[in-house]
Image (cartoon, rainbow, N blue to C red; front, side, top):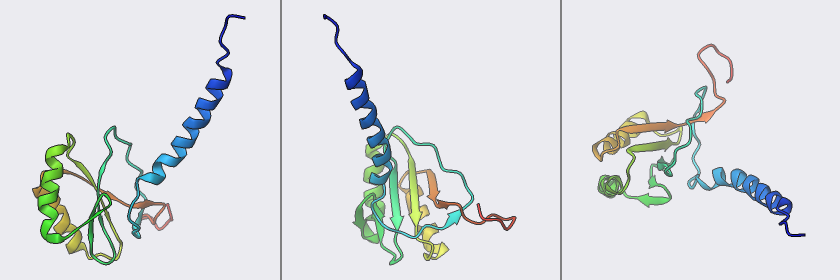
Length: 133
């Protein structure tokens, strides 16, 4: 028999594909925050790993998984902006953070060169018609 049997190889590759598809979303969240719930749809995924800025309930700012002091926040964002081809950034803020603090961080992100800011929420929250999404 001069043919190669590829059936076991395909089976193993499909199992690995499913494992990575399930595990990949679990690897993107690094900091635990209590996100507000909205009725908005999820954004489509990008080819480049999205830059994520997180505001925790304690008021600390985290870029990806690195805690950043407020004094260094703008400088570090400008450095990151020079290395990235995309100006998209996701802002994850705990629901207990005051609105003014969230806007202050968004202003700093805009000043650093990130004009495409997405606010991250959990889906399934209340809607204006009174129903739960």
